Length: 414
Image 1 (spheres, rainbow, N blue to C red):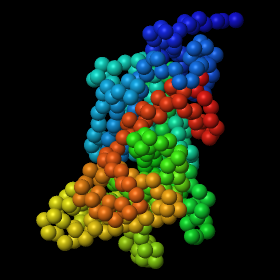
Image 2: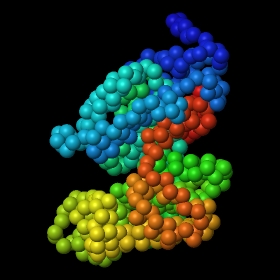
Image 3: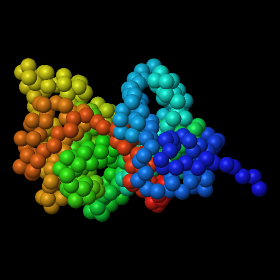
Image 4: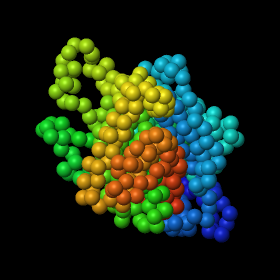
């Protein structure tokens, strides 16, 4: 019987996770990889919470026209870059999955430019896309996940590429690939699923990655565990998600593509009868109308621009229409926040405002004025998605959190 020798490592020895390497084929499943690792690792590496060795994580966040990348050593940022992809580049690809080699080369070029060898990585974390409904947490990338992401069986979105790109890089050097708090996180209470019409179900689809990450930070600042707190969490971006988060679970949220406040480019909830009439007007195909309400709706449909900054400048210069549109958007956001406060039975520990639009004092001041009666309002501008990806992978690798399988079963990384 053929045997392989693996070096024993002591906790006092200066080492790196790359000291333990299992060669695998690019398409070998990570489940088999972990089985092999668990057979050969020394006892020291079975302990949870061992953090004496620093770990490097590559975080990958693909968007519709960009790929955001970062490398962290533990939670210290080493390198970061946003790679913009022009229309002329992306229009060459008929399907989203056809972009994989193009985006993969961009990731490899980023690492080469920074003189970083993938063999020095401990794990790779990609943004999770449209998958089957899932509980929040960190998931190991597996064959079933890759298949669903490639085929777009639950919907086409650039974030579907996150798990694929992470796996491609990770499998080359025999390390795990993860996704963290994907778009399809579903922690709805039963009554949140009913739409009001049999056959049409409300679905949980939200900016879970950023919303969960910011909630953890606010909980840390307060000095209480997240599972003891109730927040209304608002992601203000191209789409707007307003969620009721009860003891760490996102129990209700508007689907930013279908309902809720209108945003810079999305129509949000529309008067039903008028929408049905428009569908049968003969003016638009189904595809054209979906594009209009999800990419040319909201502020864009009224003012011809998706830039809230431009709309603000017009409003401040005396443009009455621009001022009215922004006031209406704030009105709808505040109204949705109030609605989610009732989902929490009025027991609200705070309202969290995050996302790109949270940089706008014009918007934030006006929202706060309407909702501060609910409690403390925490403003966390921008997005922490790359950091959140790295943090999720590290929590699992350090034994602080259990990894989730795409089947939904928890299993500790050994």
